[in-house]
Every structure is written in structure tokens, then in C-alpha cells.
Length: 152
Image (cartoon, one colour):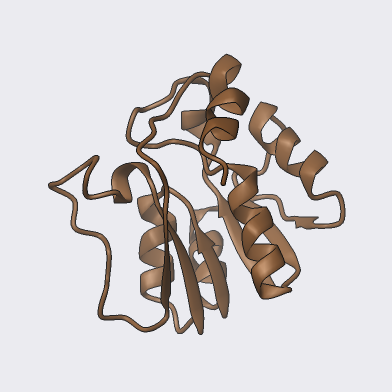
């Protein structure tokens, strides 16, 4: 199982430049590379972003939020985690005993974009870093085009 916690909530319609949504292609690439079954959780309530994820991954499990504490513990106890731009998810993964943590070096986590944030634990062998081109959070009308522009 590859746990894919989703940050959508407040950044879906009112984007913050340093909190871009994680492109569905990132998850598709990880699924192809690892052969693991994706489980999406956290902020998976219907919206244009999570609807895209559901269409892209029709066989994946989508777990509704059971609150922040349960979500944090679910991430913390998982063995394989895909981390998009979210300090909440980042912290839970960092405090976990995961075997593998796939971190999207994107937005807030990209030192070229936000030099004051130092959130890349290079000395932790659990981490696999996935560098994204410099990009920013955009509004709903521009998200699909923005994601296509940075796909491999």
C-alpha cells in the first residue's frame, strides 16, 4: 500500500503560491515505480482536484477524513508514504517509522522557491526526493494546465 495523503481543503479554491496541489501524474509515476496500491486519505471530499484523482485512479481507495489526529496517526503508522506540499503530512511522515517516504520537492519544500524553509532531510535514508520544476499554486481554472506543463 502507498499512502497518499491529500492536501486540498483551503488550497483548492484560494491558492497559496507556495502550496501547489500535487499533480496526479506524481502519484501515477510512484504507483508505476513501486507497484504499490494507492490509498488516498485526508482531504478527499469532492472538489475539482479530488474528482480528478478519482477519475485518474478509479481502483484506488479513498478514505474520508476521520479528523486531524487520526489522520496524523494513520500517516505516522504507514510504511510507504507519498508526501505532497503539506507541513502536516510532512511532519507525520518524518515522525513515522515508514520504510519509504516519497517527497515531492515542490512549492514550500523547494529550496529554490522558499529558501528559508529547510525541510529536506537528506541524511534520512527513508526519503526519496522527487524534484519538480519551479511552479506555484494556481486557481481551479488553471490547475490542469499547470499540472500538464510540469509532467515529465
